[in-house]
Length: 220
Image (cartoon, rainbow, N blue to C red; front, side):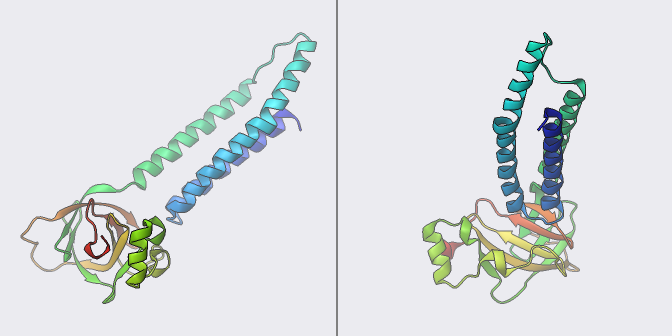
């Protein structure tokens, strides 16, 4: 295969990765998939360099030396590489800005959820047992405690996308999650100050939040 064809294929691979990476974060809301895509990216770049680019570059350099010409990248290739690098940086900056949790949210006595703009929501458990466990993220001891208590796996217990109503997912440091339906509160603002939590928005005006460094007591 000629070098320019290989470079074009590699550019297509990189552009496809950027599209898939952004789609996994913003459309599917699946950060786990985006992490696996990073592994695929590293493998793809390594294969391109070791088995494709280096052998072809050496062969081309040898051919050019035979004709007394200088080896190097063309201007078009350099511009293409620069554009793709800029796209990479833009994609990671956008993801870091949009998909990272932000401060300013408050949780008041597990009854009120306050947005950074001051909007207050009343919290209602989705069910009498609204707790689940991220079993894969737990250490062996905590995971066994969660299984003994019959906690469902969060990967299958609650829908984190295609939500039918505004929902609040509260996750604790020991990978336990509680789920609440939230409604605009008509009551007076809570008198006591709330606990600052880190959140990011998900579809249907819902929120995924962490309560650092709190732990659920029955799983300690």
